[in-house]
Length: 215
Image (cartoon, rainbow, N blue to C red; front, side, top):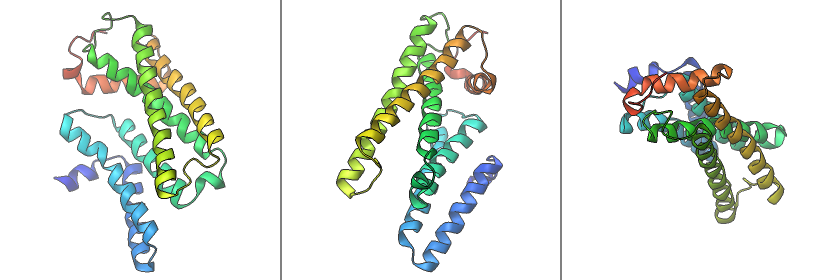
C-alpha cells in the first residue's frame, strides 16, 4: 500500500526521494554521518504531508504536495548540507518568498474552511487579512526556531543575525500579503493565473470541509 502510494506521487517528488536515498547510502559508505543525518531527516520531513493527509483526511493537490517536498529539499538538503545559502545570495530570499506566498494561500484556505466555504460569512478582506496574519505568524515562528537552533546547537541558521532575520520577515510579509491577496481576489471572482487554480483544486478535493461553498 505504501509503495503504491509513493509511486503515485509526482515525478519531481520521486526524483528528490531517489536523490536523498542515494545520498544517504553514499554518506554511510563514506562515513559522512552529518550528510547521512541530513538526508534521512529531509526524507522524513518530506513524508509528513503524506501522513498529514492520512491522519486528517485532507487531500492535497499534487502541485501543493510537490511544492512542499521541493521546499524541504531546497531548505535543508541543498541549503544546509551543500551550503546553497552562502553560494547563492538569492537562495534564502527565494525560499522565504515562496514559502510566505504558499502560507498566505494556506492561511486563506484555513480561514475559509472555518466558514465551511461560505463566501458571505465574512467580508472578503477580513478572510484574507486573517489568512495573512496566520501566514506571517508561521514565518515569525520559523525565525524563532532559527534563533533557538543557533543558540542551543551552535548552528548558523540566522547567517548575519539581525539583518538576516529582518530581511526574512520583510520578505515573509510581502509573500504572505500576495498569497492572501490571491484569496481575496478569488472571493471577488477574479483569477490570478495558476495560483487561483490551486485554491479551486484544493476546495474541490475537500468538498466535505467546504459544505457551504457555492461558485
